[in-house]
Length: 277
Image 1 (cartoon, rainbow, N blue to C red):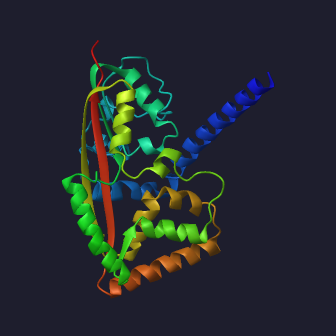
Image 2 (cartoon, helix red, strand yellow):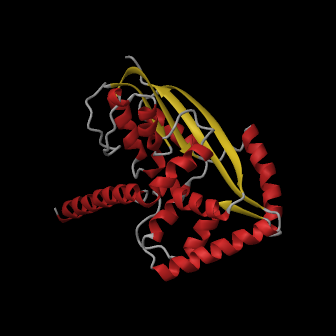
Image 3 (cartoon, rainbow, N blue to C red):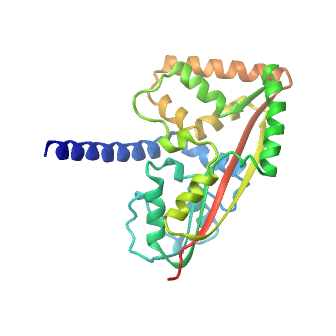
């Protein structure tokens, strides 16, 4: 009986931690929301559709506001009946969920038989692919430039400075499975299959960008780095000023050497179909 009570208490605590993580993760975007659309449009051109953050504005511009509805809810517990939708798209969202398999099962539940799902998550390219070979070749040049003080990469720079100036508290900055993996194609493909989808297809798309403005480089990383968004909220003004000063000094030194400020993005894209059985 005592073991049963302990197991129940642990399960309740875990569920509460997961709910708090999801809420805190979503709230971390509040301070950067005015920058999110701009950087999403610039640095996710490799994706086949816009992110949800831009959809409301696009619907208004296209005169579709009367035919669309935007709802905020828990992706792991969707408030829709079974077999409701013809298609579902999840872009750069799955790695924010503590239980991504549960979210995919919910997508499966609310889709109609024969409906399609497309899931994209940030990922490096598969090693045994043309994109992977190109990435390895590019890494050699990148490592040489970094050794000469002529390259800095987003979001590696801000994450390193955050670790230095704002030590991590007990709460996670990212989900456990996202922290452990860098190439998501295989793991997401397996989860999509486990949810019940068939006819699985996968691809990888990426984009390599250079920036010439340090303010731009700073805002980009403060927008897209989960670690930065969350820990900056913990820091006092003095710590944040020291972090920002070091960031600008290092970035400006690279530009003075005619070096590069770079941002490499990529997405594993997995598609599947809910069987018609």
